[in-house]
Image (cartoon, rainbow, N blue to C red; front, side, top):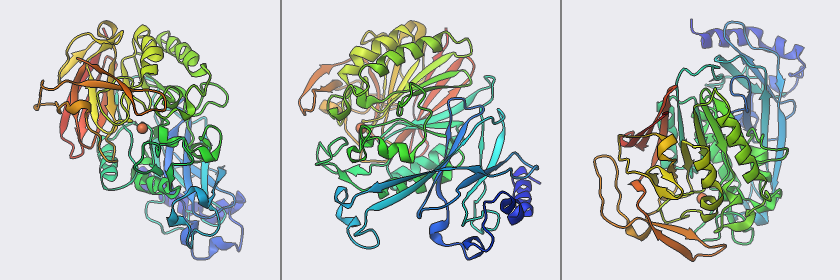
Length: 496
Ligand SMILES: [Fe+2]
């Protein structure tokens, strides 16, 4: 008998009695009635806390406001434990923010409300598989017939035994986005890095419909829930670690436009009290840092320098801490915006080159992952703004001597971008040294840019794709995979 089967039987055996004893089910309440569609939890998501060996957040959504939301967890044959209360975060969206779709029943004429639940679990056992169920006063998972009611996640081990993680950004929902979610599942990653512009709730064709512009941003709050529902098949079990993109600047919600993501998503946010989407954590031998690229983005400058230099100071302190930690071999930074890229679309960020890249150099950051440009691109190792040597597909980089590798992984599901000035694609077994890769750095709140011809753009692919990183105690093998799973690039990053 599998652990899961045992756990399911234990849950059913415990049934209503255990839940009633914990005062979760109200006798004679709607829990005994047929389970209404709106009462069913949906869009379950796992996020690690700052310590992935012991801390996990389980988040989900309800279509109606619920009372007494909870999570129950089990490690196997012992059955599900007592309910752990979840926090309800209600988000109200006024109709005049939204597209016309929401001006008719059942959406109108009232504002749209979304109900997100978050349960923080602490003190978990490392390297352990937990099964869980989510419920509330009027939905008892012990009596539900919903398939897949029980989901599972695994906490991080405390030793470096090797693992895989995946990354891409600019997903949204739809056919290509779904394909990449499936490809993530195929990799069986320990976690996934979601590199910003998550839902494309802000969408539209004009340059300003990209976040931070309440007068021109075209918005559909329901797209968030389409994203969560689409991804649940993976996110219910694979921790989804998000970073903030320009389309997460939903100005109408306040708090620099981050009021929406704060209601929907829980990230460790341990940079300082009140930091949003800025956090550091360690998984085995890898130190990971999530940065807020809106803080340095000139083109969509609504949140430019909104941390007042705090993020930059914290980044330096955190990099120093990581490099002083003997448990950490590799340092990976992830954010939405590109420090170095030759794609059109969002281009590259000159402020990141001026302020962040010198720190990436000084602290020998191994890998910087970003999205923003909806393509795949890998640089040669860069130091002081220059490529140090050519590293083609199946090559090896030693960051301590060579410099930092920058990868754009933004082809996560939304309409693809092009490479600037027509630079051709060049990827595994399709190498093309023609064209003139050119980096485009936008000026503040402007469509004009400073253009620079560069030599470090080594791999370029214009197709839906993701990055999978296989980590060992001494190496990180970075694989870039097309939506059909085919290999388009591979590079090995090694310790000296
Ligand atoms: Fe973007």
